[in-house]
Image (cartoon, rainbow, N blue to C red; front, side, top):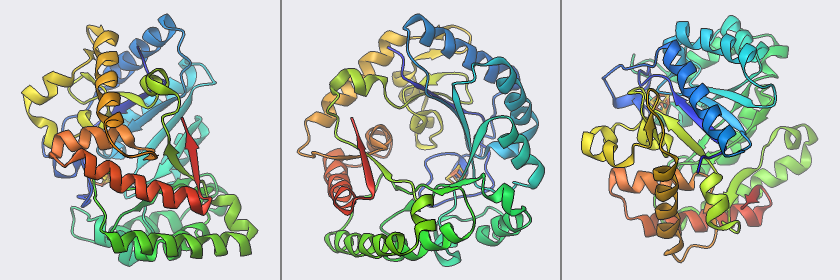
Length: 349
Ligand code: SF4
């Protein structure tokens, strides 16, 4: 069994140290994939997908911060755009601190979506997204983004994270981001928090404010992308094909980017348990299928009925951080139901 998406964790270097980061921010190993390793991983994944007649949805380039590894990443983007089928979507995630006009143009002109992790107003962004240099990461990104012509800004997408810490400012943050000129604003929720009761009330109020805003201003409603939710109505088969297989900087494949990039999952024994192949030896699709099945069973034991889109990340996060999975799912269930009731969520199977 092979899923529809491949994630390439190209480096675990990062110039930030975000509070909710599971990845590179706190990882000082500074390991990266070489260009040849990135190509190998992609070709190996394509071959496995082809042998299962699996339609490929997407290739993601993530990290750590991919732009700290720009030499290899830029060459990978050029190679990918020339040597892979045009109907495969490709995207790169960045915190934007090293993003300039030329890099943005190279990424976008070669068919990659440019997704920027940026949470909104200065007080929100800087509170969670801490730069390694100690300078404001909000100021760092805004300086870069403000130098872009509007035509380039309109091609970039922003992915803000809503957490219990910033939910009270959610509508203001979304408005701020929609005004900045991005092509679209695609929020998602932090994946390993169990929210307190009063936070759900705040979320409901914030969705009301956001809905008002989107109703009043057509230009906003065109930019807001609905929040991904899941109901698992497609059963194990759909669940197994969903989300990604991820290759880490060690050249091993894992069932989720949370494990391949995770600081907490550095233990060799932990990683060994979840390895599903290697870029030199091939992908172990049978083990991948078994891990998906076991995750599905764990999720279905819960009383939760609706889930946040990053369900697999939640599953593996609970294992890495030893958070109570049932509590996490029930908290996610509440958030997902409030989101769905607001009309600003999109449920898939
Ligand atoms: S969330 Fe992204 S930008 Fe922030 S520390 Fe982690 S890898 Fe770096």
